[in-house]
Length: 421
Image (tube, rainbow, N blue to C red; front, side):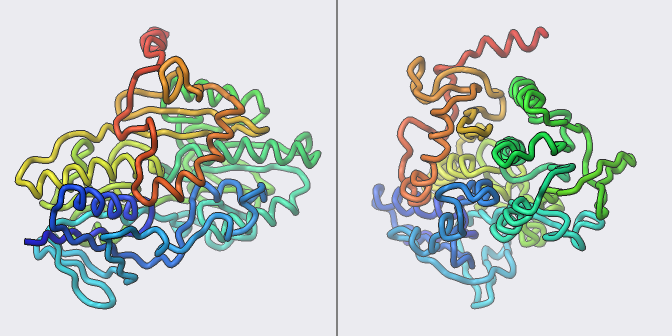
């Protein structure tokens, strides 16, 4: 009998999971029907939106970071361009604007979205006084705003957590520091990062490094400051603290999918209640989640979705064979952090192990250096775009980088030394 697997969402997680599942089923000679449902005609390389505001080479227009989604639907995957309207995990059906799809197993990869309306005063100023770079259109408008900027208070504000790619705001701060320096405006600009976190990053060792780096660049970090409201010239926190701005770059609150909450699978913000080790839904059988629509305690980033897709496919095939899902997901995240002036930092971590120094991916050899600003890490960031298009989305293996984090080549003794500080 043919097993029917339905994958919802045609972003990074959905495409990788569907393509990988179809390949694994062929290799094992299994009768699996893989169907992918989404309604995005264009696929956006989301890390590229960080560079669009600065019109970096290879990132000047949307055409530089977008391709047809259908170009990445692999053999053995049926793609349905439809709008999903409801999920019924009891009946094992998914309704769309075109009809009803039944499933034996369901994979949710519906992503998350920015919610500008969640902040008082922000919708009225969005695209004029306040800007962002988490969507293609907002990134292009921000490019124009930066061109017009002649100095003053430039405020980068993270409204609340969680957000997609938690390091992206820090990268933007570093890149705008470089941009203003090149335009001769840095000495005329007060650059501030406002964050709900206690520092620049969530992991202590990396936080110390990144906070120190921002301080060396003359960036003021305002911690423990979630965003409550926006006026024409300042933002305010719930405790009444106010910070002025001439140009506001904000990362609005993020929410998951209402479909997940409506199906009884979510946490009230559209993020699916997910077993962080098996990636199974906590509220329904035969449902797996991956990527930004989970509520697991790791970064909402493309590398995480890629690693999770491997675990989801592995566990799907086990359940089809009558076996239990294995707790293989460890929250592995791998990320290049742009620091400006042609350098970047590489971090590699998971649920339990924070970023530490070392060499990656080959122990003692690298060639990448962890938790250190290098030119090679910057080149690695740029090289990831072709890797994303040609390896990651089609579900091909990325050499030497596995779904589970390895401690080989890492200076794990740093953790003990830091704990005694």
